[in-house]
Amino acid sequence: MEQTQVDRFKEAKQRLSAQQATISKVLKEGKLPLPEDVAAFVATSKEMAQLGDPAWSAAMTRYTDQVTALGQAMAADNPEEIRQAFEALSECKLSCHNEFRTGH
Image 1 (spheres, rainbow, N blue to C red):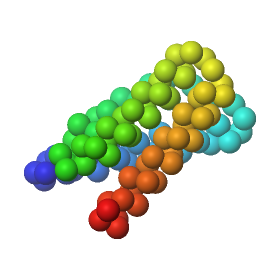
Image 2 (spheres, helix red, strand yellow; image 1 turned 180 degrees about the vertical axis):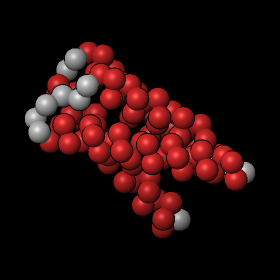
Image 3 (tube, rainbow, N blue to C red; image 1 turned 90 degrees about the vertical axis):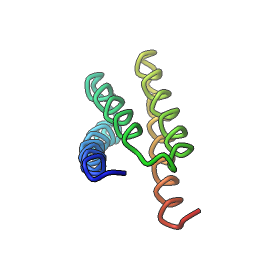
């Protein structure tokens, strides 16, 4: 990745982290996230995936599939599906990070 793209990727990741923390906090409180918070999270996730290294495409596809599932659960206004989709998304993120940290 060129430096400008690296900087944009890092900036998107920082925003994504803050957005994820907001959604996680609300869900832990037993509430549902605001639609605009999830929409921002979905948009930032897609931006990050587009900026990612092409070598990460398989992992990013898994991640964006989970992001899509979260968006669909929100659109269906299904609290249990929202919680499950967000949990699966968090697990996907951890798996992806572990995969790239260990080189597998």
